[in-house]
Amino acid sequence: MLAVDIDNTIANTSKSMLHFGMRIDKYPANVPSGFWSGPKGLKVFMNALPMAGAVETLQLLTCGEPLLYITARPAESVFVTKRWLIMHGFPPGKIVFTEDKLDVSKMLGVEMIFEDDPAQAIKLAKHGIVVGLISQPYNKKVKHKRIIRFDGWKSVRRKIAPGNGVVR
Image 1 (cartoon, rainbow, N blue to C red):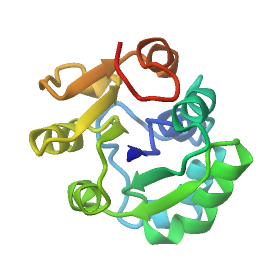
Image 2 (cartoon, rainbow, N blue to C red):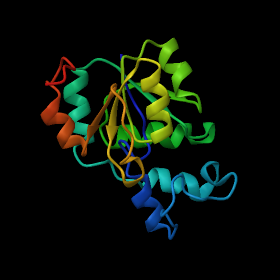
Image 3 (cartoon, helix red, strand yellow):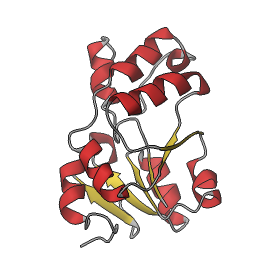
Image 4 (cartoon, rainbow, N blue to C red):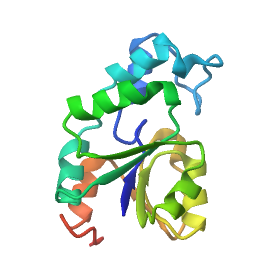
C-alpha cells in the first residue's frame, strides 16, 4: 500500500504559515500549545497550496486505487483536511491522524510512504518501509538505504514508473 504525509509533503504548510506572519526558520516550527487545533492553525491548513505536481503525480501512482494519508495533524482538523484534499483534487483514500506513523504503517501494510519529517523518515526506513523523502531544508542530511530522496513531485514523477510504483 502507498501512503503519504500531508504537511510539507503534499501541502505547502510552511508557505501558508509565512502568509500568516509566522516564522518557519526552525523545524518543527515553534508554535504555541494548541495552535494547530485552534482557528489560526486550521486556517493555515486550509489555505496551504498543494506542492507543485503532487496532485497529478499521486493520481498517476495510484491508478484509481485508494491512497492512505497519514498525518500528525490534530483530530480537530479532520473536516478541514478532508475538504482540502477534495478541493485540490487529490486521490480518494483513508486519512489517519496519528503521532505514530510507524505503528499505523505496519498495521495497514504500507510498503512505501512519502514523507518530509527527518525523524519519521529514519524511523520508518529502519523498520523496513521505503520512504520517498520530499526534500526540504530541514531534511537535507537524512540518509538511509530505504530512503529515496526527491526534489519535489516532478522528480517523483520522473523517477517512478507511473502505475506500478517501481523506481527506475
